[in-house]
Amino acid sequence: MTLKIGVPSKGRLMDKTFAWFGARGLTMRQSGSEREYSGSIGGLDGAELVLLSASEIPRELSAGRIHLGVTGSDLVRDRLADWDMQVAELARMGFGQADLIIAVPAAWIDVDTLDDLDAVAAAFRAVHGHRLRIATKYHRLVRDFLAGQGVADYQLVDSLGATEGTVKNLTAEAIADITSTGETLRANHLKTLSDGLVHRSEATLYAARAADWTPAARAALTDLARRTGLALPALP
Amino acid sequence: MPDRLPDRATIRAEADRLYAALTETGAQPVEAEILLPAGALLDLYGEDIRARAYVTQDPIRGEMMLRPDFTVPVVQMHMAHGAEPARYCYRGEVFRKQDHIGARASEYLQVGYEVFAREDPATADAEAFALFHRLLAPLNLRPATGDMGILLAAVGGLNTTGRRKAALLRHVWRPARFRALLDRFAGRTALPPARLRLLDRLRSASPEALMQAAGPFIGLRTPEEVAARARSLIEDSAAPPVSHREAALLDDLLAVSGAAPEALARLQDIAASLPSIAPAVGRFSDRLSALAALGIDTAALPFQASHGRSTLEYYDGFVFSFHADRPGWPPVASGGRYDALTAVLGQGRSIPAVGGVIRPGLVAALRAAP
Image 1 (cartoon, rainbow over the protein chains, first blue to last red):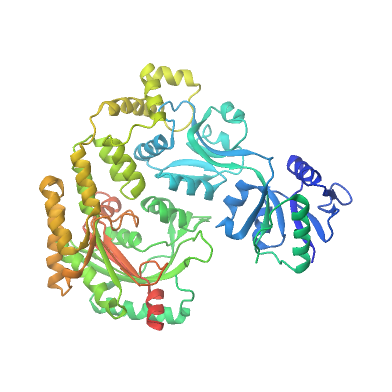
Image 2 (image 1 turned 45 degrees about the vertical axis):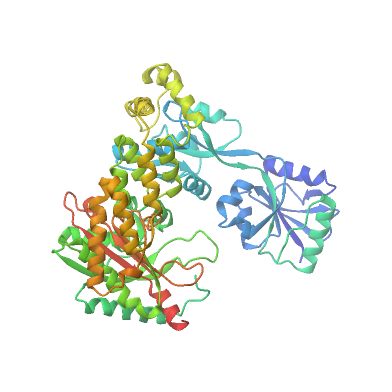
């Protein structure tokens, strides 16, 4: 059984993943045409590339269908319950940085912190008859964060795209979304809460605890760890 | 949780046995639907159950959820067409998503009992507790009791602004946040720098002018709401702090823990300085008498003033639970008084109510391996 490594199948994440491994003497190559979602790793025997959408990689790691995977730490921590029981973090890779933040309308001049958001949520519920809605696709991360900070009387509403537009469209009062520069937030008349940083995400190499760690897969991982200077994780 | 619960048939038989014992007391058996309308109901639950309810979409009925608890549908049913006083019992599955691997069951049986009675709440409290105590007696469980009413009365009686009291009452269920707010209102911790900066900015111009400068106004929350809160923040910054004496009394109250008679004596002491809790402490005293009259050994009954603060947010009086000596287990049974919930669901009408649930799965596990 070969060591299966899941990497993002397109765009900058794929390019930077290839570059990260390349800089460590491991040349990743897509096999055949650009449309074929598999590949190989030059210089590493018994390993195979599986090209996947970055958003599918947490699920594949969880199921153990790939041994290693590269994806954003935001996706792993949001999609996987008890993420650190399911995967081991091998390396933060230094690219794909983005912050998951909570933002409210810039015109809310009375709101600067989570404490304000909580007070506004209580008043909002009394006036409008429903809880203050926060649009996001990161339910677990945002819920755990707000619970830890003692914010109540909000509800999360699912938003799969154009989250920044939900407030203007009256389908949410606030948002929790990924931002790298804050440009889109400003264009949509939103501002970040000063203590509203939920998670600082980064492309990360993970190992799946549930994968079939055959002697061959283990040997390939040991080889990879030696060449990249990574510490070997404890695996079952 | 137990590594392995008994099989479903054994648990079902245990539920039947407990349910039969409840019906023998004369309680009226009731059923609740498994698929409940989500919107209004979810809003009544605290954050904990809300985040854990299985919500689904029905093409005709809209957003629905799998029953996460019986109390709310039973209260709804009673408020719609129940006679008074009433005693109900029920059994069935509840469903709660679990967000941790291998931890607790996401589907399990509950057997429950609820009393709706206008007269003599102390006796109704005692009746519910004594009934559970009797049914669970062979299992040697550890009871725990408390009274949310005392803490709620203490906060309601603080000598401070209505807004601050409302903020504290809202967060009674989140002890860390409650503590942070109380310390701030009492001046025991400084205002956070972010709040000081915000106040400076709000004092620099009218809310309207500041909003104007901040750009286009978007969203459902109106400029009037923003302006009103901006003004109230400035107003609040001028309000005198909660006195150190009152804050210390609240600390003392929250720390009360011990055998019921000693806890009662301690609370009576505190009530001498904090008269707002006197009626609630009186109810605690009446309840102990009612419990003793039903044969409960109140001298050894544990009482904790903060018990129930991290459970269901609708309890507002007596709270109780029964615990097995097994690490990681949830309570085998729990319950409490929820007078305010009946007012919320009664559209203008309300009735004092108390009740609780037993988990037959845990009872069966204990009986199989004592």
